[in-house]
Structure formats: C-alpha cells, structure tokens
Length: 209
View (tube, helix red, strand yellow):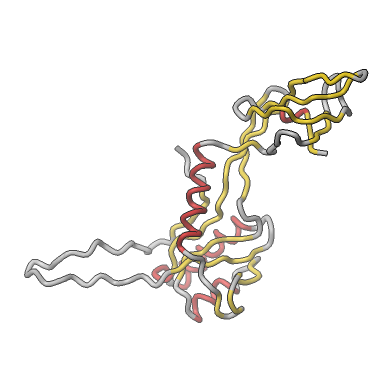
C-alpha cells in the first residue's frame, strides 16, 4: 500500500525508547519530547518545495533533534473520462505545510526565513499555537482513507442540477437521481419533448450548474 502523506523525516530524529529499568532495577529516565505540530503558511503550489527546503536547512543547521516530521497531507482522487480512469493527487490544505518541531527562537527563525514561507498560522506571529493532537490524528486518518479508497474528483448529490457536456444530450440540464461512485456514473433525469427521461452518464460527461 502506498503511503499518501508527503513527508520528510529529518535525519537524526530518533524516537525515544520505551521506559524500562536498569540492570540494578533503578528506573530509567526517558526524555520527554517537546515537539508539537504547527501549521506553516506557504505560497500555493510550493508545498513540496518548502518541505524539501526546510529539510535541507534543518540538516545544514544541525537542528535535526528539534524537528520531527514535515508533512504535506494529500489524498488520491479518481476521474473517469471517455471510459479511462486516471488517479491524481489532491492536497488537503493547499498553501499549508505541517511541521513537527520544538518551538524556540532558533527553530522559529529557521522556518520563518525559509524561501516561500509566509509565516505560522495561529497564536501570535512570534509565538504560534500548536495544533491539538486530535486534529493531527484526524488528518492522518483522512489520508489513510484516501489511500485505501480514492475519492472521485467531483462529488455529486441526489437532487443536484447538472449540465450534460458530452453525448447526444449535450447542453441539456437535468437533476441527479442516482450516484454510483463504484462505476463513477450518475443517472440524470432530463426533460425531452416534455417527458422526463433518465440518462446514465459518466462523471466526466456532466458538470455542476
């Protein structure tokens, strides 16, 4: 199964070992991570470029221990056109990158001064607010679902009005009566010579009005 979260694990960021005991029976001290997740705003379309740039800057600065994962959450979307199915990638949050990091003056400056980064989201400009862990868990779950079952590129709802853009009923408007996501088809009712007629069409043959 392909992992669909674009991420970089910064070299040198090794997870803490499970707590245990020393041979003498004394408790072993396990360092507590101060890393939290933050949202970084970047130029739209430059998310992956920023992800790579951040990773390089962190390595050059020798600050791997203060950073964790850098994510560009994406999902797979499927589109059927002329009987051919194509799968593409869609970003959950265009213009944003998620960064796991310890927030210090040094790490803040490193991220803020990375090319194509405009700043952090949430809190004060120089003291951003981290994302709650439950929000990160939710994002990860959405990404996993997108990998296991790609979503159609365009979602239709029963009762929605659409325009037919291909085939013998081109430029007719109709109402969606049924949506079949397994086959990427919709059944649309169009009025022809005063009579309501159901027509089955591929997603690519209709568009939202």
